[in-house]
Image (cartoon, rainbow, N blue to C red; front, side):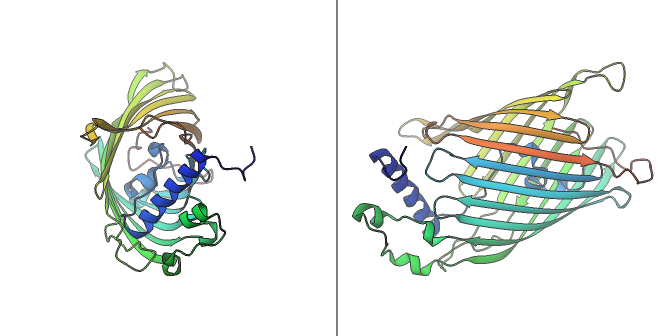
Length: 344
């Protein structure tokens, strides 16, 4: 297909995207990006997960959303955390990059994370975590095609708001708590506690604080007679998020049989109507996930199948996660101070 030949549907999609972008820059409250595999991006979900791996843990997440549109939304995250078990602490670093739309509206975030663990008897552990971040947000004006350019078929836009757009930088602070045992976990996180300004045109547009609650349980279905035998289990889990006037629920189940892992999640708020007049309910997507899990390495792929009124024309979303979780070979073996956090 010739990319220079844009049919009427393509034009409508582009105009809608540009309208959304204009609304985002001028009026709307900024929202965080998300990962469907929230269970495979623990530091992004809650800083209290920092240092809950074996010793060294490296996590990579990559997401492409709406690939069928003229310009997909791309999100990448790279994280490393270290379990300093004898000091009851975890340390972590995380770098995220999110690029949205044809204008390359981008946000780069560099974070330092710290957690501290307290045993509650022999079966429970309470972990508290904090996150300090520095953000860079900007827009590539050369990549924009505004409405007056499309309607008048010209290469230059005369929109007066272009002169007001500027790149911004700001500090951010988040925190969270997590309670876990060998088979269950429950926690909450508060991101953007200081609600920093996100406006690109100099007016007031704070980034709303995001409140998330999450939990799950790991239920063994079969335990082998020997330690190395295959173990089958299911792990129902959920995460509920609210940011400003927007909220979202992800709920589902993951099945594991060494080394195969598969899962199904539903995204939406059941029984909540987005439009009472038309009887439309808040439903977003079904998430299908497949992965492989080994003692020190795991990889997963998921696909978001859109079930909202937006339909599947945009192409849903593809997501990949890779995790290395290992101990240093040269470290002297010692008794673990804390029980391990269960895997999802």
